[in-house]
Length: 288
Ligand code: NAY
Image (tube, rainbow, N blue to C red):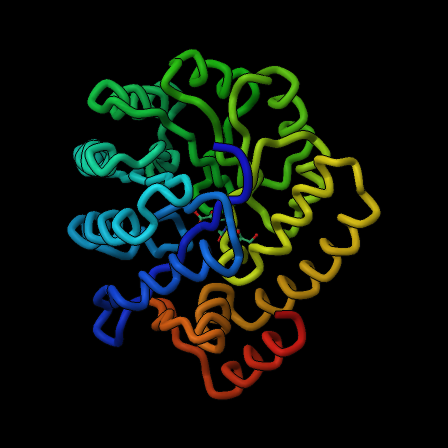
């Protein structure tokens, strides 16, 4: 379960329906061209919070059918509707996903006991291993070292997707829980996290830049920091341009330029203007 995992995009058509052919092409591109170690399915990048339960299940099915056993698969099942989370966790487990992951419950200001109960409830109902998905900037939910430790007492919780720029907490977690899996999840901070000995990374930009993420991670593991820094620099030039132009939309546009039918983002995400489509082309030509 270690290594570089793409936070997988999903291809949607103008009506917001899943474009199965396009989704299969995205999976293939990640496995065959970028050679990533795994896929994180139905995360933020997969527009998970914009789609129905049936669509989430269909995406799990298509991705598993296309990837088979070629790479590791993590199914993000988190939901404010706990029955939906359990249903998706069972569904992905039946499909033989290697692990499930659940975003911390958000919107209502749940206290820690409620968050703990959410994870334990999902895990009581499913025979699989869980990776906590912590992304305070989007959920407003921050947990401290002791709280992570309390969640980790459940042996089925095998790690955390740590999507935060808090390197103090990251180092403390690494030190305190050497046996748990820690995935760094801001692609622009991959090298810094790798130096702290994370087990892997999960990222949206890996859909187009997975090959460089693999290089950064492997060079850092070999102690070749200067070389890794060069690649992180180019990576961050790319990420800065992508973020300025529109994150998910620009990644989809770049995939299209690579011959992958990545479709468009679901509303209320907007589509790119002609000017931004042109900019995406320039970004692809410059860096990819
Ligand atoms: C997800 O579930 O798809 C992720 O959280 C992937 C992590 C990404 N975060 C978001 C909010 O998209 O890869 C990062 C991020 O896009 C990247 O570092 C650019 O800032």
